[in-house]
Image (cartoon, rainbow, N blue to C red; front, side):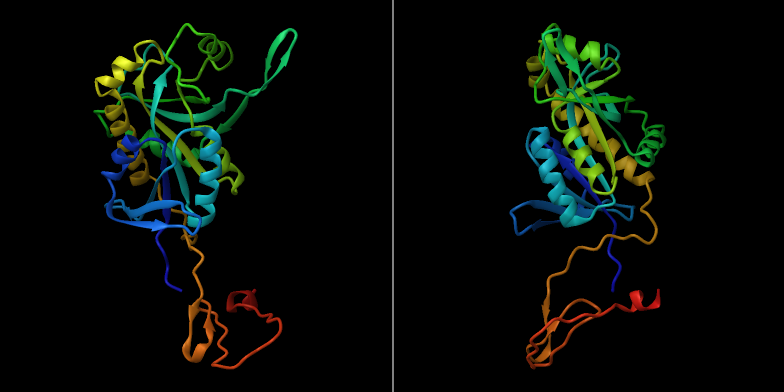
Length: 288
């Protein structure tokens, strides 16, 4: 059976984020799953990686569901969620990049008469991808990168004095950025065999009243461009796992004389008809 390229699945929520990543991918070709999901597959130059790029839309629950479907379809070795975010730290500037060391889902808790008792949920990022990112950004003088937790919530934060902003400061004080999809993608990757996953976000605003003005000035395009550049640099550093190239499930093919052939190990009825179960082993199983 021919060896296929290892796949890195890169996910975005917004069209401008998709465009920023797409600019790095060559020889693109669109693929459509029977369920309707679409990806563009292409090559990341000077690497062994095949990129599968998909725009999922907004929201963590949506990201979790669609990421799970994409993982089951494409069998990637690494999953990235890439795009823009609001900065939560004073030393973060527009265009800086936050590489998520872990991802917080900020809405977990129990409401009691004494107030909300927070039940934090956090997923750590892949150590291998984080280490590749730390190595990669050393060679990127035009990028200011920060390795910090990222908070995910179903909210666009545009008021730094709001109740939710105070909630984040009190309960997720080390978070460097807030966005809306990272925890969903990270959870999907974690539940699929602890697949390597990393959230990379460019800072497009300061999560305050100046968000609209910053967006109008092109901050989102700059932030998305920087996040995409860091993601590609990570994949330049990160090596695929040996002996575990991806293999998509291949559709059955028609054989000679009306028989049915399945991949390399095959059943070939040569025009005959068989009624009943077939049990067998591949060569690899027989050699164990």
